Amino acid sequence: MARSRAKKTLSATQQRKKEHLELCLDGEAVRGPDGTGFDRYAFRHNALPEVDIDEIDLSTTFLGKPLQAPLLISSMTGGFDLARKVNRNLADAAQRLRLAMGVGSQRVALEEQSVADSFKVRDLAPDILLLGNLGAVQLNYGYGVEHCRRAVEMIQADGLILHLNVLQEAIQPEGNRNFKGLTEKIAEVCRRLEVPVVAKEVGSGISGEVASRLERAGVRAIDVAGRGGTSWYSVEAKRAAQKGKAVDLTFADWGIPTEEALVEVRAAVPNLEVVASGGIRNGLDIAKAIALGANIAAIGQPLLAPALESAQAVIEYLSGIIAEIKVAMLCVGVANLKALTKTPLIRRTP
Image (cartoon, rainbow, N blue to C red; front, side):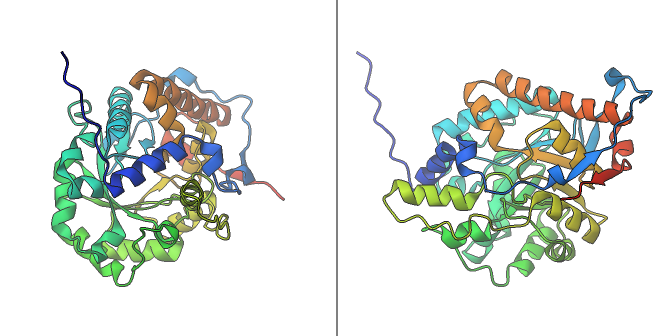
């Protein structure tokens, strides 16, 4: 007779991560009310491009590692069984397409080592640029360089994302709200950690002034993660509603639109690598982002449903995105990303 398997009891942190994933599967329900701002721009069409689409080269490097296309699979999840499936399908796809990938916040695995396996993907993706992830605010709550080092070693990461989620922490019932003195603590991590540090917002955007402070602190790259995609304010509001609590939407439209954040950050830190994320939904968005100064772009929420299905479903989705980048480049007459960065965009009048 087969032994019955006892149902695992999730910790509070694991349960929160599970609720986040379930809510984020419905992208429209947790998307902010305003767009990314990319619709304010258009390329000028080139009717005679003198380019063969099959020869367009999307290869680039980020943090010193080669990518076959300017794409990062954004940090999303980890810490429970279903998250393990998501991360492994994403990693398999990233390896086969030679893209970059970040994992979700590893705090849950530092607190409970038994769930570390849900983040470990190197066996499937030995060659990709892989980024670990911790909340920067945890540096004010007992975390330090050694915790960052453990997160990197846990997944054999090439770098570490420190994510900034001020609004989410402010309204989350379990939130950590003390951000005082955090810049210097980020600087200490940058000085002492053996791998590069990426600073990332989670949907409210990074301004030029903050980007300059982060550059002085020593971060190697900035992911602007602007307003226009998944709204973690909306996610937390829906979590509250599910628990029978009143829903306050006062800050539902808070944040810097992705396009605005990208332009500001690129102007403020011309020597840093910059990731455009926050509502990136197609290859045309990515082409515009690169023309506006991004090195690469990141996609998160749209990949959740394919990742729950299979690695092949993720590959098919991302292959469509990559094909769209090439179509945009063909239609403006450029054959590589360097040329795309020099391609002017038309700013549409309201």
